[in-house]
Length: 516
Image 1 (cartoon, one colour):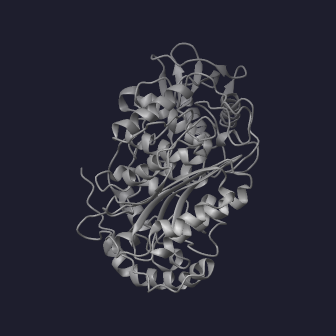
Image 2 (image 1 turned 30 degrees about the vertical axis):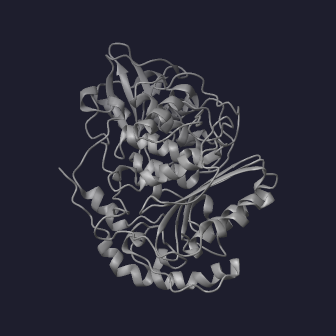
Image 3 (image 1 turned 90 degrees about the horizontal axis):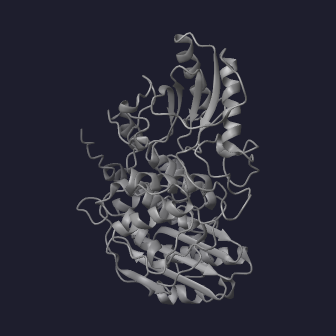
């Protein structure tokens, strides 16, 4: 069944006056920040409004049913209500593989909040000429805070015209902006409806129960799962299936063979990332945090299995020995399964929170879906291959992981803006979560505390920070209502806060100048 077109621009027509009023409230702050003369009232096209990219200070609460990420809740509800299934968990959760009755099925992702750029109704129009982008950006990007090497690219998403470029083809360390590439690759390889499934199987005639990891780092052991796949629910349903078989005692093991190769990222043990394994709960965090750096358990899969065993005991099922690793056979009967939110939601979470564990998982799932080894090398090759299939130019580009934590990664400013333009392509609605997942300046994720003095809500961007590296790539709504894609990369920086400030001012300048 084809999903009916949601036509979000009709709602945008109703909220456009509020967007304009909110923009006028923000405008003086931008003007003060750059000591510019007050521009004319900002005009927002329906396309800019529905994109969720023009969320100025009061818009999130004043402009209708938007949630905190800029997603229209009405569209999300409409999409969920559609009677669709999709995705396949690489065939592991399908009817053919014996998924337990009642197990979560793949479902459609949230409805897109972006109208087709350049389409007939609700289109983003090219704006009248303003100041040259070079006149605005050159003085900022020459700031010594950006170090000795930097690159920048700015593109009008409606026309594809490059408004600014310097060093656009020079490969530089991208840090976490790598996640934009990972997101595009995963969505094209798997589709936005795909879900990651963790399941239990019983080996016939042996009494051996296997917890099979599905590569879902968001699997949670918390009492309140919050919409994530629940390890407790999996234990409850597994215990019920065992009771129906008259089984109250099992030998528990766990299967992590969906992934291959080393679990250790080249950066080694680090609070920014758990060991990369197909089975873990709550990203192997040892505290109650849900994002950001945190201490991790040394053996995420073993710890998840031990936690699962405890949940089984609470349900009256005993395990005869501490769980150990083993591979489930094809003869095993599936008892129960739990599935993650759709890939569209996982991509949004990965980008908003700069979630390294999710990024590495999605890179490996891209490898599995394309028949490559699910290790660091295979995942990197799979991401590059998907981008090549999209016709993107990868000269000088190198992927060594999915998160951008590896300093050997190399991306260009040109590729980053091409990725954003591809995600905005009306012919590729499946990629829209790449844009809706970008943190909103002053509101969400890694941009929550930034842009408080200007362009709050007008900039959506993925941040990137490593020692000596500061990057920023995303979209901005300018004073004429155009949506621009931009990418700024700086290497050899010595003061990360000063470099970050310059990049923020550069993005804010695009919101205020109406550049040509």
